[in-house]
Length: 113
Length: 111
Image (cartoon, rainbow over all chains, first blue to last red; front, side, top):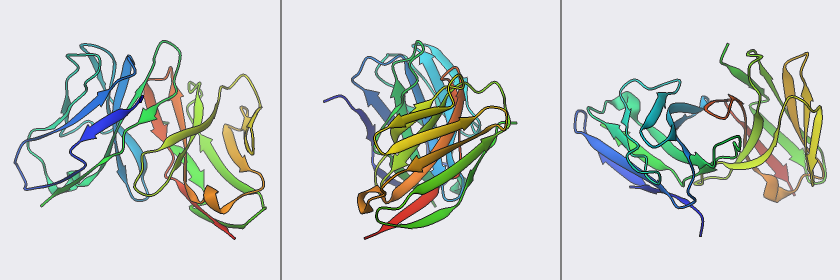
């Protein structure tokens, strides 16, 4: 089944404790992206990647890191999480090369205390 | 410049009625305008999308109307059904890389 998977689905952590949220897609997509969703703000793009080893900042990159060492994986790293990063996070992928339809993962709900 | 405005924030429609959600943008470099549907506990799913070279696109009961000169686009859901009850997001993108989303509209279709 073609899909985007994220792990973990739920995470409660404390301020300053480094964490990684994994994202993987099995559709051989070139483009991958991370979003955060907050009430009343919609989805805001954190980082995106057009291909392996190519990443770019979205609208809200502060406090986040990403890497794209393999085509199928695009982990989101919070080196020192803070309470304002409590949010619902979504990973998405698309074929790229002029095809913009994004497929979203199921989401990761992160709480930072 | 990067903002996408969306209205209304919430919408209640009777079964069989027409649901209309509106969005407006500023950046004329946007060349792709998708609408996403999101059910509680799920990720957004692409519903329908349009490019700025056409003024309307229809897929089943869903239609996007696009007004390039006014920098506005809207989603029309004909014959709305209770199963359409969800949150809808409009978005805009340049070259399919950077995406800007509207704040969302919560649609409730009453049986």
